[in-house]
Image 1 (cartoon, rainbow, N blue to C red):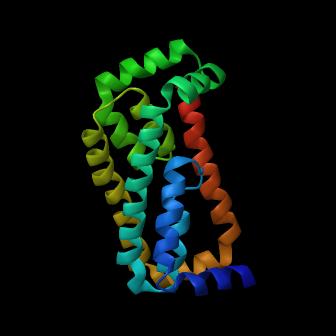
Image 2 (image 1 turned 120 degrees about the vertical axis):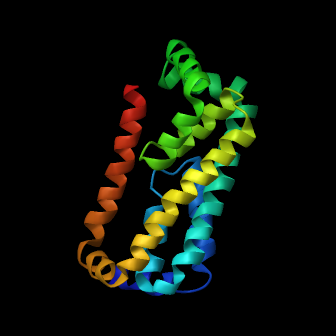
Length: 190
């Protein structure tokens, strides 16, 4: 319980927005922890932090998505082929390429709104040279919408959320990680 109180105490500080932004950048590139895990403590600790934390999360997501896209775009010949050969197959990649070409915007929207890991989509979009402005624009709209909805709900129900977070903190963290892993499983099965 002391660690949860400490996290809530630190998350009410103004610099915590930068932490949320940085952690969301990392989530968009390599972490498998949903951004809501980073934004929740600050809003639960202090209701008025909902707006700046939501903005920090959205900016971090867009920066991280752009970096992951660039990794896919520029490192395909070295890292990309190795990833495909070791974690999938060229046949699956060709199927993904066909689906992404045909349903790209719907796939971006689905990934922005669900637990499917965003970093995989961003790297794949770069691999496939999907139009970067379309990718970033659709991502910005729907990822920001998702974070705004979470931020609003936490703001609206802050007192209840505060009690829930303090009482079930570890279960919520484990649940968020399981939720992210389910998204990874969905990607693997597709």
